[in-house]
Amino acid sequence: MTQYSNALGVRLSAVLLALSLCGGCDAQESPPVYDAHVNGGGFSPTSDGGAPVDGSPARRIEDSEVSHDGGMPSLDAALSEPELDAGPPGQADAAVCSADAGRAILNGPFRCADEPESVEITGESGRYRIFTYEASHPLATNTRAFPCARQAGQPGGLMAPDENTEACSARGVRPWFSVRWADAKAACEQIGWRLCTQEELTRACGGRDMRAFTFGAIFEPGACNLREAFVAGDVMFASESPTGHFEECVSPDGVYDLTGNLWEWNANEGDEFSSDTRFNQGAGWKTIAEHHRDSDMHCNRTVTIPQSRADVHASSMVGFRCCQSAP
Image (cartoon, rainbow, N blue to C red; front, top):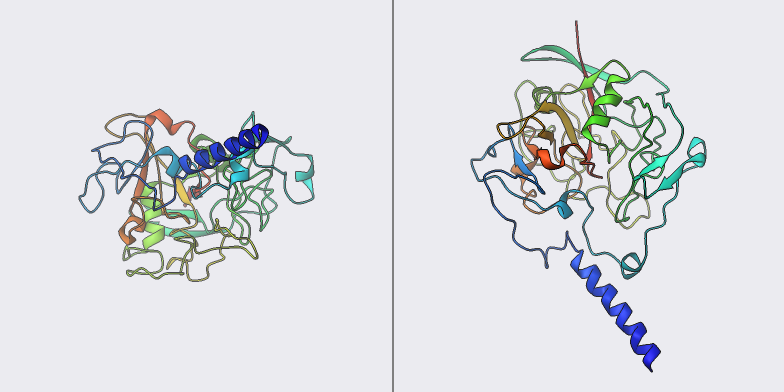
């Protein structure tokens, strides 16, 4: 009887732990804390790194809503670490998924098989080229972004190998996420490109007429990977989609996934609070608290990553793409 009671107590504790980790459950979600600016742990959707475009106060969203996938963890997940695997056969076979390092361990460098697919656009600051698709890792497949990358339904995931890596732009592969701003910048520079500025991403998303969404002025459910729109095959969980999967999610200039799929780092650095503040924009595949309204997904909305976390922030919902000034 004592052994049974002890075992039951352990299982009950695990259930309570799982409930406490439920960052994305609407029923248990606590109200967000409103603040004029986020100095530490959260981020605020804005148009320029300051106040939101609709004039409302900046919104604080906790780390659990940004860096993790939320949802109700299973009892087994609460009792043990998720089992990680390197991914499909090939070069990834040699990868070691190191939770201690927080990365896949695999010798590089990693080079793209082809030149990046891109589109040339005329913006306010002149002509530039932009990746047609969200940046992908050279080892990306249509089911995994890179060796040891998070899989749909997993509570976490690792970053890509810490090796010299080129940013690729190709259709039909999982985009590169769980990438820090500095690593995204370096991957673009490996091919002689750079991170896109906020102005460039906004112009590419909205077109010459600066529409609200990449597909038009009015929100269209299912046009892009927003609000958990993509579920692969027989997988039970929503996730990022392969690049270019949503045919209607294309800008007037022919750029895909600028609305939805992954939020994307931009090149802008600093605000009135710190030169180390960083930003991403474009909305993502997952609905998170206080970032679920149609207006939160407009092309010109940005997310502020405060100085306290900017150098280490790597989310399974944030990626990037590269730009290059055109002659």
